[in-house]
Length: 190
Image 1 (cartoon, one colour):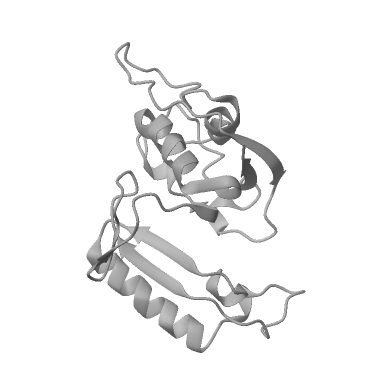
Image 2 (tube, one colour):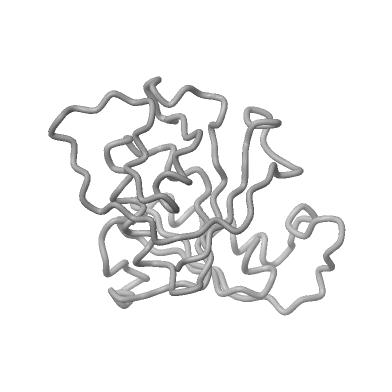
């Protein structure tokens, strides 16, 4: 969707099989875009960007694009986290926030679909409940563990607080499981 709106978009995935499937899907969408990629007020007359998918571990540098390795110091103007945080064990949350701070350039934007908001953060996952977690990690510099018992030796390195939230709203469209509870948050890198 971002590429269809003129962005040069990257997707990172640890599974080479998933990257191959994403490449096929993107090629089909780029050649015959679905209307839902544009919304009601936007036209499909923009120049398209590119959609590149790389095999890599989000927490590591040097992601592979074919035989090429992307620059370890790469920064992005915009990062969209679409339910990635809720799939990670809560003890990894501070590292997620620190890595986002590395990847989003100064004054760049991080957009997060906050899901599942209906689930108690102390319940097991994945998906893990994230109500209040994004704000705590990204803006406050907390550990994202509010409401979750944590062992005394739990790691707290990587605390962030490198972002300020500029927008917070319920998306007009969402999947059935999150309708009415999903939230979108938009953060700017300080």
